[in-house]
Length: 428
Image (cartoon, rainbow, N blue to C red; front, side, top):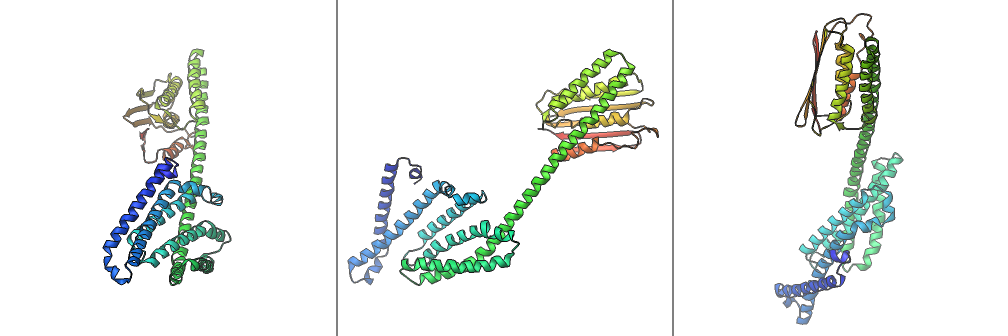
């Protein structure tokens, strides 16, 4: 059947299907006759007895093969058939796969019932299973994707939904009664099936559909809320990045201005060159989600060199930087480390008092170890930075929590004479 569904070797597969079916029917006819030979005495005419046994065997095998081939064909082409139904495309995109899976489950259970149950003895059970599950499946999908959403739009609750479903159940039962009566040899099957179907629709399908819709609705609301929060985080992250860049540019320009007053044009040119490299970095790479750790380290070195130019004439300022050269392919979020160094130069350097800054950066496999320590001095009352806490460290803390959640360890310690930062970061 999969080959036939794909229109491959149609003639050969048709012949094989007919041959296997015919062989199975004949084999089951003979087996059924021998296994139920005790029933021959129930008939006055031996030919009529054989006809009955052969008929039962034929019906049994033919029905099972019909179900099996229907399932095999549906398994191959079911989704394609559902996709051709135009009105289903206007609903939730998951409805096609959900209907496909539900139908497959029903066909599998129907085959199991047909294989296990005897059509002669358990005819009512088999007929009931052919009718009841499909009706309930259709009813459930209509409730989940059409009835309940419309009721919720009009602010109607479960009570209106439940009593409305009772009315629909009565209508469905009457329609089934009209359709099934002419085709049933045993009229007792019809009321039993309809009663069972009505009980299932009211007691099982109705509350189950309401629960599934509520569950799906709550999940969709939760997903939408998470998307909204993620959008806010992205916007906040972009805002944090934009806060960092101007802050550094003002610091760098002040550094160059101070250098120009103290030194000749040669040193100023060196500072401008490094600043140009840093500005190119910010313009071209700072907007990316990830960059190579090598480029981030180059940026840090340029910044430290600029600061050394500014403080080179002061013998009481000691700057030690031990930053390993990075020859790996590790990736890092841009401008993630610079705020710690900025903070150290901003609050740890004094042109009037002895001060120091120590910076170390090294990597081991995919783990980055970054330490910054600086001296602390008491600022003058007229120092404009005294009352400013700054935004650099708070920004980088938020970025770490957003981008490296569960992949970093940040330790910040402050004493009367020293400020220390240790960052361990798992990189990609």
